[in-house]
Length: 330
Image (cartoon, rainbow, N blue to C red; front, top):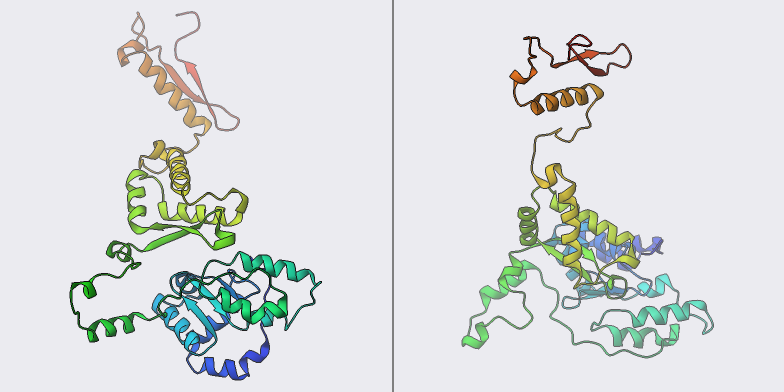
């Protein structure tokens, strides 16, 4: 995660900034976010799901998508929906500078960062734009571009305007998410061991949360998942693989269940509250009475009650067990 980012004050008074502000506050906020968010790098080409934009700016998901679309149409950036990678065209120039000397220490870092960018349609174009200025090596081949980012309203308009011709045109296109995935929203995204290089995350959906809640009824599943997310975010060397993440989450929830009241049962509050000395004495008294078998067992041969009694001490308010019978009588 970057510790700082350069953002020129001229953005607010320059041509680019004025054009962006004309689209409204949400588009302006997203433009600034693209420069300053914690997932960005100094090259301006990085993994950024729209969900991150919506969550971290507080803009609804539909509004975040529209803002990215407007910024793409205005030539500020490009966004590929398939790889979920954004490229802010001039960000490298703002963060790094116009050019670097071949012996500059940043050249090595920039080349390493370029090689670690997730596969996307922008790799070749980025290389062509900056290879001379930053002495880039080993050009990478770009992936085929996906369809442009579209808002939900535009998708619905297209569906209404189009008419199917043949069953093959009505079929769901390859790569489209299944209907179940659309109806099963992601609740938490947990970074894996490859998050730093390709932005990989393990997505926990609403249906999985429901299943976990049934299995672990004493656990606040959503809150625990957020703790797991935070732990993985701050313990990069210990992050799990995408394949190993389900077992890791299940083990964590199982431990939380075992720490709960009665190992997971929803008992009444205070069931595991630490007993005071007086409460401990009463508990011992009850256990001793139960061990005698019945109240009748507390009666001696001469009819006297020889069951233990409780007496308060004069010190800290604790109790001690004493015997009602006179010394030497039993």
